[in-house]
Length: 244
Ligand SMILES: CCCCCCCCCCCCC[C@@H](O)CC(=O)SCCNC(=O)CCNC(=O)[C@H](O)C(C)(C)COP(=O)(O)OP(=O)(O)OC[C@H]1O[C@@H](n2cnc3c(N)ncnc32)[C@H](O)[C@@H]1OP(=O)(O)O
Image (cartoon, rainbow, N blue to C red; front, top):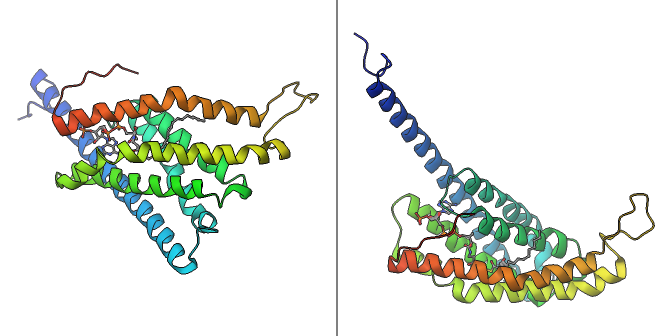
């Protein structure tokens, strides 16, 4: 005798849909758990490498070079998170995540990695340390949360440390871009002057000034987003967020 699933009745179709949804959600949880564990491990490796470097060398000079590859890999891999939001795998705004991830990738590839002369600036170490503490906390929060094993201190750290770490990270990033300006102006890197065959002019120096200025409207949005998340998660407030 055919079961209700096979015979194409309404009840059968509903059962099939429920099974498919469960399968999708199991796959999504498995992927996210794997992704978060890999990212926690990556940032832990970075933290250990920085501590080891400092203990052995007793200086921050050369530290960026020593961790550059690992940093570039894990920070660039975070682009996957924008995809997670876009396909609805996590309940987060694509815009908020996009700005956060893209600004970091920009800092790594187009500032710190491209301009050797600034790699030993204290501000680079500042944002590296801040990012590392943030990401170890954030990814371990997501991992333990998915496994329903979340210790309170990780939840507390995820939704409190950012109050200090976010402004510190921004200070580190802005000072680094500021330190890069004279080298960019002198070298004319990533710039196009007229006349050229494309008839296009682009000045990376002014582009960096615009990027610095864009922190003024963008950073408060990210910070207040996190404050709202904090109220929701730690104090159970119901927050209605606008759609993207
Ligand atoms: C191209 C040139 C660009 C130039 C732009 C220049 C302007 C830039 C200005 C921006 C300044 C940025 C400065 C910044 O880089 C400095 C620093 O980062 S300093 C270090 C401190 N930083 C932080 O603390 C970061 C805090 N911010 C965030 O975490 C982010 O806003 C964001 C990554 C987007 C996270 O926000 P989100 O809304 O996702 O918060 P939640 O963590 O509460 O998550 C919401 C729900 O989604 C679930 N979720 C999300 N991701 C995952 C995942 N990977 N796995 C599993 N689950 C996930 C999460 O659990 C929540 O669900 P639930 O509520 O059910 O638990």
